[in-house]
Image (cartoon, rainbow, N blue to C red; front, side, top):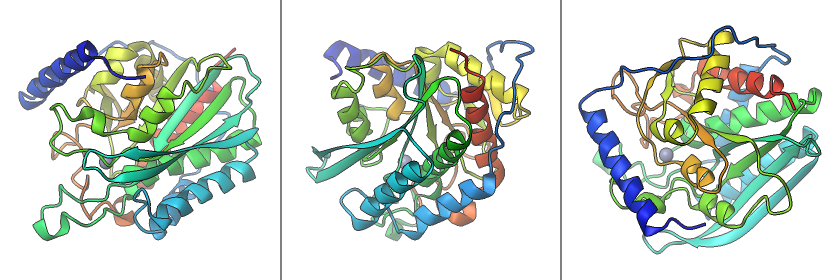
Length: 334
Ligand SMILES: [Zn+2]
Protein backbone atom coordinates (compact mmCIF):
# COMPACT_ATOMS: atom_id res chain seq x y z
CA UNK A 1 0.00 0.00 0.00
CA UNK A 2 0.91 3.60 -0.30
CA UNK A 3 1.04 6.28 2.34
CA UNK A 4 -1.66 8.85 1.80
CA UNK A 5 -0.95 12.53 2.01
CA UNK A 6 -2.70 12.78 5.36
CA UNK A 7 -0.87 9.86 6.78
CA UNK A 8 2.39 11.24 5.54
CA UNK A 9 1.63 14.55 7.21
CA UNK A 10 0.71 12.79 10.40
CA UNK A 11 3.87 10.78 10.25
CA UNK A 12 5.97 13.85 9.57
CA UNK A 13 4.31 15.48 12.54
CA UNK A 14 5.11 12.56 14.75
CA UNK A 15 8.68 12.60 13.56
CA UNK A 16 9.08 16.28 14.36
CA UNK A 17 7.64 15.79 17.82
CA UNK A 18 9.82 12.83 18.54
CA UNK A 19 12.87 14.65 17.32
CA UNK A 20 12.13 17.46 19.74
CA UNK A 21 11.80 15.04 22.60
CA UNK A 22 14.98 13.40 21.47
CA UNK A 23 16.81 16.72 21.48
CA UNK A 24 15.53 17.73 24.86
CA UNK A 25 16.58 14.41 26.28
CA UNK A 26 13.26 13.26 27.64
CA UNK A 27 12.64 9.55 27.92
CA UNK A 28 12.09 8.94 31.56
CA UNK A 29 8.56 7.63 31.39
CA UNK A 30 8.05 3.91 31.29
CA UNK A 31 5.18 1.54 30.82
CA UNK A 32 4.25 -1.07 33.32
CA UNK A 33 5.13 -4.55 32.23
CA UNK A 34 2.97 -7.50 33.09
CA UNK A 35 4.19 -8.89 36.39
CA UNK A 36 5.27 -12.45 36.88
CA UNK A 37 5.19 -13.70 33.28
CA UNK A 38 5.99 -17.39 33.19
CA UNK A 39 8.57 -18.05 30.50
CA UNK A 40 9.74 -21.50 29.50
CA UNK A 41 13.09 -21.62 27.80
CA UNK A 42 12.33 -24.37 25.30
CA UNK A 43 15.48 -23.94 23.23
CA UNK A 44 18.79 -22.31 24.04
CA UNK A 45 19.91 -19.62 21.59
CA UNK A 46 23.54 -20.21 20.65
CA UNK A 47 25.37 -16.90 20.44
CA UNK A 48 28.44 -18.48 18.82
CA UNK A 49 26.36 -19.82 15.96
CA UNK A 50 24.73 -16.42 15.54
CA UNK A 51 28.14 -14.72 15.62
CA UNK A 52 29.41 -17.05 12.90
CA UNK A 53 26.40 -16.10 10.77
CA UNK A 54 27.42 -12.45 11.15
CA UNK A 55 31.00 -13.33 10.17
CA UNK A 56 29.89 -15.29 7.10
CA UNK A 57 27.84 -12.37 5.83
CA UNK A 58 30.59 -9.82 6.46
CA UNK A 59 33.06 -12.08 4.65
CA UNK A 60 30.96 -11.75 1.50
CA UNK A 61 31.76 -8.04 1.41
CA UNK A 62 29.22 -5.20 1.59
CA UNK A 63 25.79 -6.56 0.58
CA UNK A 64 24.81 -3.50 -1.40
CA UNK A 65 21.75 -4.01 -3.64
CA UNK A 66 22.74 -4.97 -7.16
CA UNK A 67 26.09 -6.49 -6.16
CA UNK A 68 27.21 -10.10 -6.30
CA UNK A 69 27.76 -10.03 -2.51
CA UNK A 70 24.10 -9.14 -2.02
CA UNK A 71 23.10 -12.09 -4.23
CA UNK A 72 25.41 -14.42 -2.34
CA UNK A 73 23.86 -13.31 0.92
CA UNK A 74 20.41 -14.14 -0.45
CA UNK A 75 21.74 -17.57 -1.49
CA UNK A 76 23.16 -18.12 2.01
CA UNK A 77 19.82 -17.25 3.62
CA UNK A 78 17.86 -19.51 1.26
CA UNK A 79 20.20 -22.46 1.72
CA UNK A 80 20.21 -22.12 5.53
CA UNK A 81 16.41 -21.84 5.73
CA UNK A 82 16.14 -24.95 3.58
CA UNK A 83 18.78 -26.83 5.58
CA UNK A 84 17.02 -25.97 8.84
CA UNK A 85 13.78 -27.46 7.58
CA UNK A 86 11.51 -24.56 6.74
CA UNK A 87 8.14 -25.76 5.36
CA UNK A 88 8.59 -23.46 2.42
CA UNK A 89 11.16 -20.96 1.25
CA UNK A 90 10.23 -18.46 -1.42
CA UNK A 91 11.45 -15.23 -2.90
CA UNK A 92 9.83 -12.11 -4.22
CA UNK A 93 11.77 -10.26 -6.88
CA UNK A 94 11.44 -6.91 -8.51
CA UNK A 95 13.19 -3.71 -9.50
CA UNK A 96 12.96 -0.48 -7.57
CA UNK A 97 14.05 3.06 -8.19
CA UNK A 98 15.97 4.66 -5.34
CA UNK A 99 15.65 8.33 -4.38
CA UNK A 100 18.74 9.14 -6.49
CA UNK A 101 17.42 7.39 -9.61
CA UNK A 102 19.45 4.20 -9.20
CA UNK A 103 17.51 1.16 -10.45
CA UNK A 104 17.95 -1.61 -7.92
CA UNK A 105 17.09 -5.30 -8.14
CA UNK A 106 15.36 -6.51 -4.99
CA UNK A 107 14.92 -10.01 -3.60
CA UNK A 108 12.84 -10.52 -0.46
CA UNK A 109 13.04 -13.99 1.08
CA UNK A 110 10.49 -15.75 3.27
CA UNK A 111 10.95 -18.98 5.20
CA UNK A 112 7.87 -20.41 6.88
CA UNK A 113 7.89 -22.76 9.85
CA UNK A 114 4.86 -24.66 11.14
CA UNK A 115 2.93 -22.87 8.45
CA UNK A 116 -0.32 -24.80 8.89
CA UNK A 117 -0.86 -23.40 12.38
CA UNK A 118 -3.90 -21.10 12.47
CA UNK A 119 -1.89 -18.40 14.21
CA UNK A 120 1.50 -17.07 13.20
CA UNK A 121 4.14 -14.53 14.08
CA UNK A 122 6.28 -12.57 11.63
CA UNK A 123 9.96 -11.93 12.35
CA UNK A 124 11.93 -9.77 9.93
CA UNK A 125 15.28 -8.13 9.30
CA UNK A 126 17.01 -6.50 6.34
CA UNK A 127 20.04 -8.18 4.77
CA UNK A 128 21.22 -5.42 2.43
CA UNK A 129 23.83 -2.97 3.65
CA UNK A 130 24.23 0.76 3.15
CA UNK A 131 26.27 1.75 0.09
CA UNK A 132 27.71 4.82 1.80
CA UNK A 133 29.35 5.26 5.22
CA UNK A 134 27.83 8.73 5.30
CA UNK A 135 28.05 9.07 9.07
CA UNK A 136 31.76 8.22 9.22
CA UNK A 137 33.82 10.84 11.06
CA UNK A 138 36.39 10.67 8.24
CA UNK A 139 35.01 12.47 5.21
CA UNK A 140 37.06 10.34 2.82
CA UNK A 141 35.22 7.24 3.99
CA UNK A 142 31.73 8.58 3.38
CA UNK A 143 31.41 7.37 -0.19
CA UNK A 144 32.52 3.83 0.72
CA UNK A 145 30.12 1.00 1.59
CA UNK A 146 29.80 -0.07 5.22
CA UNK A 147 30.73 -3.63 6.29
CA UNK A 148 27.26 -3.86 7.87
CA UNK A 149 28.12 -6.31 10.64
CA UNK A 150 25.55 -4.79 12.98
CA UNK A 151 23.39 -2.88 10.49
CA UNK A 152 22.22 -5.78 8.39
CA UNK A 153 24.11 -8.93 9.34
CA UNK A 154 23.16 -9.05 13.04
CA UNK A 155 19.40 -9.28 12.47
CA UNK A 156 19.82 -11.92 9.76
CA UNK A 157 22.22 -13.87 11.99
CA UNK A 158 19.79 -13.93 14.90
CA UNK A 159 17.00 -15.06 12.58
CA UNK A 160 19.06 -17.86 11.02
CA UNK A 161 19.93 -19.17 14.48
CA UNK A 162 16.23 -18.99 15.35
CA UNK A 163 15.51 -20.93 12.14
CA UNK A 164 17.95 -23.65 13.23
CA UNK A 165 16.12 -24.05 16.55
CA UNK A 166 12.64 -23.92 14.99
CA UNK A 167 13.77 -26.80 12.80
CA UNK A 168 14.72 -28.76 15.93
CA UNK A 169 11.59 -28.08 17.96
CA UNK A 170 8.37 -26.96 16.35
CA UNK A 171 6.65 -24.10 18.14
CA UNK A 172 2.90 -24.14 18.77
CA UNK A 173 2.35 -21.19 16.46
CA UNK A 174 3.59 -20.64 12.94
CA UNK A 175 6.61 -18.44 12.36
CA UNK A 176 7.30 -16.56 9.15
CA UNK A 177 10.88 -15.35 8.81
CA UNK A 178 11.12 -12.48 6.31
CA UNK A 179 14.50 -11.27 5.08
CA UNK A 180 14.09 -8.01 3.20
CA UNK A 181 16.37 -6.34 0.69
CA UNK A 182 16.97 -2.62 -0.01
CA UNK A 183 16.22 -1.19 3.43
CA UNK A 184 19.27 1.00 3.71
CA UNK A 185 19.44 2.85 0.36
CA UNK A 186 17.51 5.84 1.70
CA UNK A 187 18.16 9.53 1.59
CA UNK A 188 20.13 10.76 4.58
CA UNK A 189 18.98 13.75 6.52
CA UNK A 190 16.28 11.88 8.42
CA UNK A 191 13.33 13.47 10.19
CA UNK A 192 12.15 15.23 7.06
CA UNK A 193 10.08 14.25 4.05
CA UNK A 194 12.42 11.51 2.85
CA UNK A 195 10.98 8.68 4.93
CA UNK A 196 9.62 6.78 1.96
CA UNK A 197 13.09 6.52 0.46
CA UNK A 198 13.94 3.91 3.12
CA UNK A 199 12.77 0.29 3.47
CA UNK A 200 12.03 -0.03 -0.26
CA UNK A 201 12.11 -3.84 -0.16
CA UNK A 202 9.59 -3.93 2.66
CA UNK A 203 7.40 -1.37 0.89
CA UNK A 204 7.32 -3.60 -2.18
CA UNK A 205 6.49 -6.62 -0.01
CA UNK A 206 3.71 -4.76 1.82
CA UNK A 207 2.15 -3.48 -1.42
CA UNK A 208 2.05 -7.03 -2.82
CA UNK A 209 -0.60 -8.09 -0.29
CA UNK A 210 1.59 -10.92 1.02
CA UNK A 211 -1.18 -12.60 3.05
CA UNK A 212 -4.00 -12.40 0.54
CA UNK A 213 -4.53 -16.18 0.68
CA UNK A 214 -4.00 -16.48 4.40
CA UNK A 215 -4.64 -14.90 7.77
CA UNK A 216 -2.32 -12.10 8.78
CA UNK A 217 0.32 -12.80 11.39
CA UNK A 218 -0.86 -11.75 14.84
CA UNK A 219 2.11 -9.45 15.14
CA UNK A 220 5.60 -8.78 13.85
CA UNK A 221 9.04 -8.31 15.37
CA UNK A 222 11.76 -6.47 13.46
CA UNK A 223 15.38 -7.09 14.44
CA UNK A 224 17.78 -4.30 13.49
CA UNK A 225 21.19 -3.49 14.93
CA UNK A 226 20.94 -5.96 17.79
CA UNK A 227 24.61 -6.88 17.93
CA UNK A 228 26.37 -3.75 19.16
CA UNK A 229 28.78 -3.78 22.11
CA UNK A 230 26.65 -3.91 25.26
CA UNK A 231 23.57 -2.99 23.22
CA UNK A 232 20.51 -1.78 25.10
CA UNK A 233 17.10 -1.80 23.51
CA UNK A 234 14.78 1.00 24.56
CA UNK A 235 11.11 1.15 23.58
CA UNK A 236 11.20 2.56 20.05
CA UNK A 237 8.73 5.38 19.41
CA UNK A 238 6.73 4.03 16.46
CA UNK A 239 6.58 0.57 18.01
CA UNK A 240 4.86 2.12 21.00
CA UNK A 241 2.56 4.13 18.72
CA UNK A 242 1.44 1.14 16.65
CA UNK A 243 1.84 -1.86 18.94
CA UNK A 244 2.35 -0.98 22.61
CA UNK A 245 0.93 -4.32 23.75
CA UNK A 246 3.57 -6.16 21.70
CA UNK A 247 6.33 -3.99 23.14
CA UNK A 248 4.99 -4.82 26.62
CA UNK A 249 4.91 -8.51 25.78
CA UNK A 250 8.44 -8.66 24.39
CA UNK A 251 9.99 -6.45 27.06
CA UNK A 252 8.14 -8.50 29.69
CA UNK A 253 9.49 -11.77 28.29
CA UNK A 254 12.97 -10.23 28.17
CA UNK A 255 12.77 -9.27 31.84
CA UNK A 256 11.48 -12.71 32.80
CA UNK A 257 14.31 -14.26 30.78
CA UNK A 258 16.97 -12.30 32.63
CA UNK A 259 17.54 -9.57 30.04
CA UNK A 260 15.84 -6.68 31.76
CA UNK A 261 19.18 -4.84 31.75
CA UNK A 262 19.25 -5.02 27.91
CA UNK A 263 15.56 -4.43 27.21
CA UNK A 264 15.24 -1.11 29.00
CA UNK A 265 11.63 -0.26 29.77
CA UNK A 266 12.05 3.40 28.86
CA UNK A 267 11.37 5.42 25.75
CA UNK A 268 14.03 5.32 23.05
CA UNK A 269 14.36 7.08 19.70
CA UNK A 270 11.96 7.10 16.76
CA UNK A 271 13.26 5.11 13.85
CA UNK A 272 12.16 5.06 10.21
CA UNK A 273 12.59 1.37 9.57
CA UNK A 274 10.91 -1.63 7.98
CA UNK A 275 8.33 -1.95 10.76
CA UNK A 276 6.52 1.26 9.70
CA UNK A 277 5.41 -0.30 6.42
CA UNK A 278 4.44 -3.62 7.98
CA UNK A 279 2.26 -1.75 10.47
CA UNK A 280 0.60 0.05 7.56
CA UNK A 281 -0.87 -3.24 6.29
CA UNK A 282 -2.35 -4.11 9.64
CA UNK A 283 0.29 -6.27 11.29
CA UNK A 284 1.22 -4.66 14.63
CA UNK A 285 4.99 -4.69 14.44
CA UNK A 286 7.74 -3.54 16.77
CA UNK A 287 11.41 -2.78 16.26
CA UNK A 288 14.05 -4.24 18.55
CA UNK A 289 16.83 -1.76 17.89
CA UNK A 290 19.49 0.12 19.78
CA UNK A 291 18.16 3.67 19.46
CA UNK A 292 19.42 5.37 22.62
CA UNK A 293 23.07 4.57 23.01
CA UNK A 294 24.67 5.97 26.17
CA UNK A 295 27.35 7.93 24.26
CA UNK A 296 25.38 9.17 21.24
CA UNK A 297 21.82 9.38 22.57
CA UNK A 298 20.70 7.70 19.34
CA UNK A 299 22.21 4.78 17.40
CA UNK A 300 25.49 3.10 18.27
CA UNK A 301 28.63 5.05 17.29
CA UNK A 302 29.38 2.57 14.49
CA UNK A 303 26.11 3.34 12.68
CA UNK A 304 26.71 4.03 8.96
CA UNK A 305 30.48 4.11 9.46
CA UNK A 306 33.28 1.81 8.37
CA UNK A 307 33.55 0.75 12.03
CA UNK A 308 30.36 -1.29 11.67
CA UNK A 309 32.54 -4.37 11.41
CA UNK A 310 32.89 -7.75 13.04
CA UNK A 311 35.16 -6.37 15.81
CA UNK A 312 32.21 -4.38 17.09
CA UNK A 313 29.81 -7.30 17.36
CA UNK A 314 28.98 -8.49 20.86
CA UNK A 315 27.86 -12.08 21.35
CA UNK A 316 26.05 -11.14 24.56
CA UNK A 317 23.89 -8.64 22.66
CA UNK A 318 23.01 -11.23 20.00
CA UNK A 319 22.15 -13.61 22.83
CA UNK A 320 19.87 -11.12 24.63
CA UNK A 321 17.97 -10.28 21.45
CA UNK A 322 17.86 -13.83 20.13
CA UNK A 323 16.92 -15.64 23.33
CA UNK A 324 14.19 -13.10 24.01
CA UNK A 325 12.58 -13.49 20.57
CA UNK A 326 12.93 -17.26 20.82
CA UNK A 327 11.23 -17.27 24.23
CA UNK A 328 8.44 -15.09 22.85
CA UNK A 329 7.91 -17.57 20.00
CA UNK A 330 7.92 -20.74 22.12
CA UNK A 331 5.66 -19.27 24.79
CA UNK A 332 3.05 -18.14 22.28
CA UNK A 333 -0.08 -20.32 22.48
CA UNK A 334 -2.76 -20.91 19.86
ZN1 LIG B 1 21.30 1.41 8.38
